[in-house]
Length: 158
Image 1 (cartoon, rainbow, N blue to C red):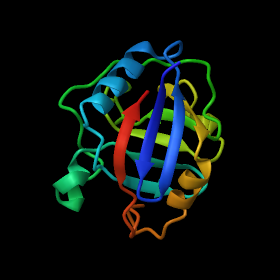
Image 2: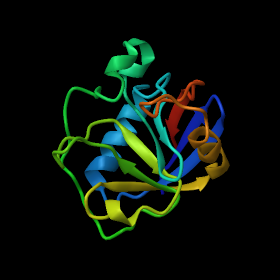
Image 3: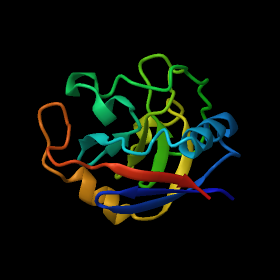
Image 4: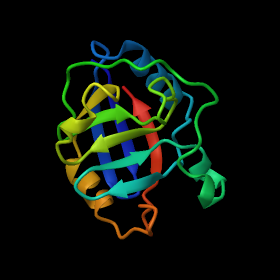
């Protein structure tokens, strides 16, 4: 079982990858992590009672107005499953097109079953939910962007 470890400016979040639910999504995440794609990106969107979102390369150096629009330059096909978006689930972010995910992902901090079968679940947090809780509760602007940085210093797959 592969594990992802996100070392953030607020602590560490570890989650198990779920290739049995989303094999291509897991492969994509592993490749991006091993290539250092996520290192230095921000959790750029935080919504208390819902989730924290990150993985946009634009957050490394792009203007704030572009945050949430970036990706790896390609999209992957959605892999929906019956796994519910409960607290601690890691899922792919996307636009209105189900097959538009690339690198952005979110961690659910409160059960969000309304997302079920619409977003690709590919991981489950095994430790560090207190870090996700700390990040989701940061003061934020009108676009749900934290006013204090929540940077992914290193994302590793073991």
